[in-house]
Length: 340
Image 1 (cartoon, rainbow, N blue to C red):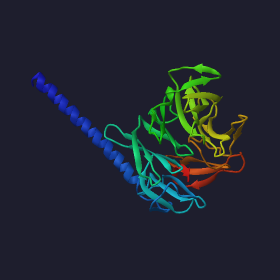
Image 2: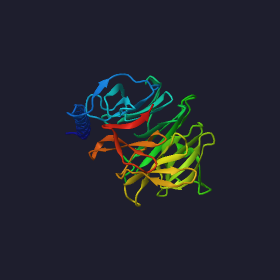
Image 3: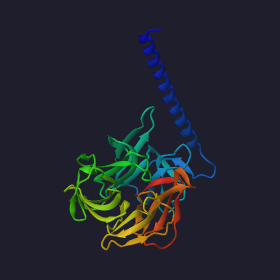
Image 4: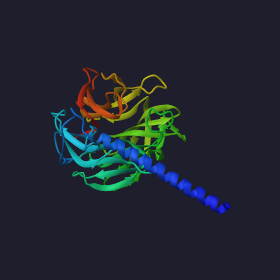
């Protein structure tokens, strides 16, 4: 065999091997998806239907229950969250909505690379604009007025518990369609002084009602900080340490967040921070909460926990925001809650 034929043979073999591996990956993913799409006995009642983001008295979420409507944006009456759920035709990895504006983060598998996109939605869940994502969907939020949307993705690593991970957080003005690709372009004031570093990461944006103020987690030099930011001035200022995935209360006075318990551990407990005094209150949930909590009202927060300790499936729980009471199962087989 001549050298040219030998190289051609090696090239063809490599292409066939790569194609075979890609096909195997796709078939394996399809097999897993098929198993997950089979309804399980005793699961929640789910039926196809419609949802408008202007609906009052409903709780929207991503359906995580096994069956044909898995990952569909679904809803239940707020007064009966354990009841039958209505599933739309929209499928998302993460979802949030406010004031008739929705954001859907999608992650579709591919042979060599998964396709990650953010969909800006109108009140009828129709796509207004699509934006490519730089990584795997993690967090999504919409401002109370619906004017701004934010999302966080992992550009390396797969979770906040990974030893090494990097995130990118973007903010979109839904009126002008001006996109800030990364909050890392904002100026930072840390402990009262201008701060610059190459390792800055942000995640978990939550918006105030004034369409300018936001809060987020800033990570640098091995520490996490709660920051208050201004969209118009493109600045952030640190407020306190060890605050991750903040969520601003409807009245704008408190932040629900996950706090790392013991350094270098991947255990988080849920707390509420009074923004006026910076006093922290531990909530009654004692499981590790790796989620950005959602306020159902000024007195209650909701969050996802792994279902029966299973990674990849989750249930929604709720707990009083003042540290009293006990956790309550809100919606079985669900994630990404958004009260409408």
